[in-house]
Length: 228
Image (tube, rainbow, N blue to C red; front, side):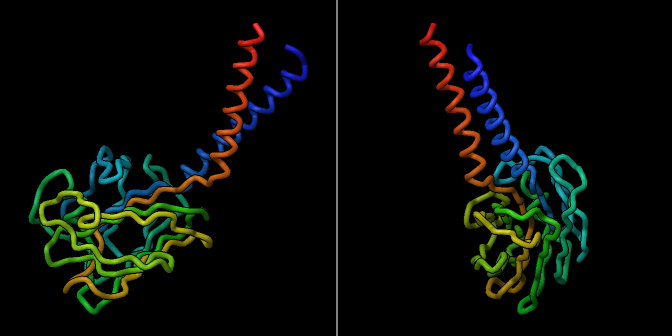
């Protein structure tokens, strides 16, 4: 193998490493499981809810701010504040999903609720959110960083049904380290939230670097095979 080929290989390996590092850094930027309320206790770390994001759950039982830990249970720079009238939940059901759905915060209409998460790394996030299981508590309409989101009513049996008991907001932009959810009206007599899961969305550039480098390495391997 000549010197030029060696240099090319090294460059491609470095690019591949850079792309993988960028992807890993963005994936690590924010991975949080949050359970509001304490009626049924904190979900187990093996519970991934609707999106399969297993790991430690943060239980929020007061206005805060409360420091957040990541899926591995490590401390982070992020914290959450939750403004509502009640931080309990509903004791009426049991099952694998109930530790999340039974717990919730709520305010009585027309009262408001607001959740602010600060200390996040700037970037783009997917946010999965869960409605309370209690038949009298909806989420209500809300905004997340100025994006309007319609209320979902929640299930009455603990099942995880998209658009009923949970949903996801894609590509939420965070530019100042803060993600804010604010109730805007609608819903039922009581409105609140059972839980959230937050994950970072890797930037396309990171994928491009990693994919390009991997393609280059694959091409070199084919060339080396044919040259023999």
